[in-house]
Amino acid sequence: MATRGPTTMDAGAVRRRNLSAVLELVHLRRGVTRADLTRALGLNRSTIGDLVAVLAEHGWVDERDDAPRAGVGRPSPRVVPRDARLVAAINPEVDVIDVALVSLGGAIVARRRVPLSETPTVAATVEISARTIAELAAEHPESTVVAAGVAVPGLVRTEDGLVRLAPRLGWREEPLAAPLAAALGIPVAAANDAHLGSRAEQSFGAGQGARTMLYLNGGPSGIGGGLVVDGQPMDGVAGYAGELGHASVDPNGPLCACGAVGCLEALVPRSALAAAVRLEHPDDDALESALLTAIVAEEAGGPVHEEVARQLRWLAIALRGAVNLLNPERVVLGGHLAALWRAADRDQRASLLGQALPVNAADATIEVAALGGQRLLIGAAELAWDGLLADPLSAGDATASTINPTRGS
Ligand SMILES: [Zn+2]
Image 1 (tube, protein in one colour):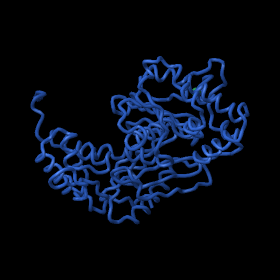
Image 2: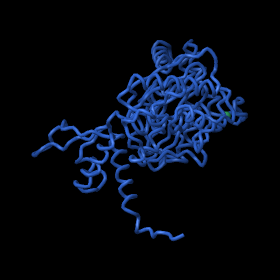
Image 3: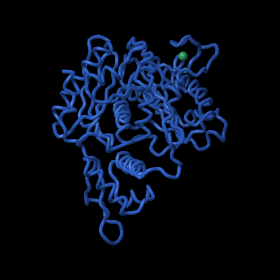
Image 4: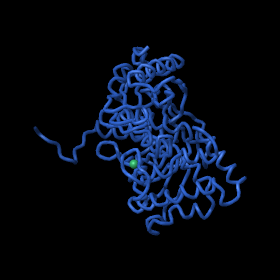
């Protein structure tokens, strides 16, 4: 077969790439002026004008003349996301299935948490998700749901959305994306929940603009992580990278659920922090607020201070390895690790990266995850948008009603 030289990339491919770049920027910045697009993408004004017109014609964006006037002349029109297309985001947990519709720009436009009386099977998850998405879609008849993403509390093969292991849900080697796509009639992708939390923070939260980022999330089932390298999520060859929860921090430590000893998540459990403030299964906000109250009320050296100090010491050891490996610009902490950071005093905060090589930690700042309880759903939506943003004209007609999921009901 004849091959093309690298210099003859066809005009269609160039146009596809440029449309994708414009739409990606409109998405990530939740609206941007034409002048900003021209500057950011290095394309001339008329090319930007053409690309925006094509995206508007295909129902992706609107143009508004509401940008503030900068200097003389007419203000540059603002290109904003249109809500004609939405994606569905799903996060199954032991006691709830959390479902949302998310617009371009990462805004949740509808959300429903479906409480469960027992841990869901994959079949139940598919059935409940499809029904709930259909209900939410029916409440938004002006929009079409075009794809879905699932944040799974476990290890997921991203290539085909096979759940290798989700210990808390009791799922092992279970196909998830395929049956859900069959029920919904739209493309579905699935990935690890911490990876998607990391993506959400990178796109719209505390990781915005960071080229190299380490994200660590502390949840009821342990500590998950996500990496961003050179501005891109780094998932590893099959989707399992970033498991810093199983970094060895104490060779003589307790047995971890993974079978090894002395893992970070075995030594820094959310449950111990909750027990110190006498709460059972608190959500992130309740845990953080109880912890901050207790730290102020309790004398130094009391049990809450001790537990916070103990967990921070182990976290610093894990961060030593990760920061030396990655040389990150930002470390983002979520869940109970964010609560731990907020409860730490100035010296403890300084010591968190204090064991890493000074040069490796020199440019790193520690931030608390900014998207709160929305981050997994927004991250799942990012996954769903991926294919569409890469090739905006591949999406069907935004006004077609046939791709609204109804078959699951
Ligand atoms: Zn482990």
